[in-house]
Length: 133
Image 1 (cartoon, rainbow, N blue to C red):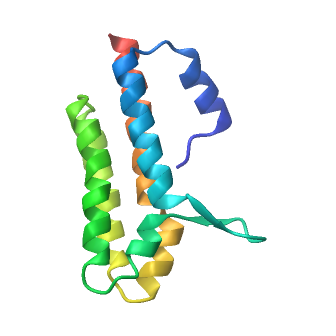
Image 2: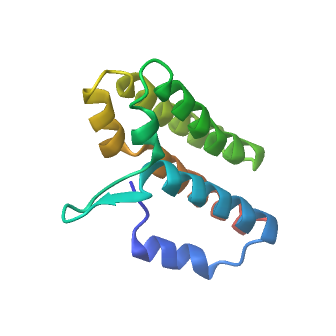
Image 3: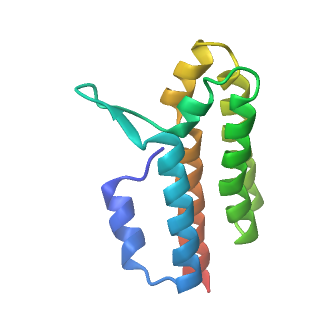
């Protein structure tokens, strides 16, 4: 569900207030840090701290889930629609539940990228809200 280059181009064309722009930058930064900061050379596979933190038995996925909650809280504070927030909570919950499964969950964390999906939802919604203002 990543934003296509056409989506990004269209969103960037619309003027947005500085406060919304700052919020988008925070969401983007955290999503990239958690889901795609590092790459495995020669494979095209990207992963982030979510995949690494999840390796810590017992608490890793809970810590990662708390970081994911920040993206959702940023969106909620900005006034994102409840429907979008429910979708974001669903993504984070699936990531937390399935990510908790030893080994398979760690592979799932790298593939699912809940934070990236949630950032895309939040950014689309923030642009929608900025356009409605």
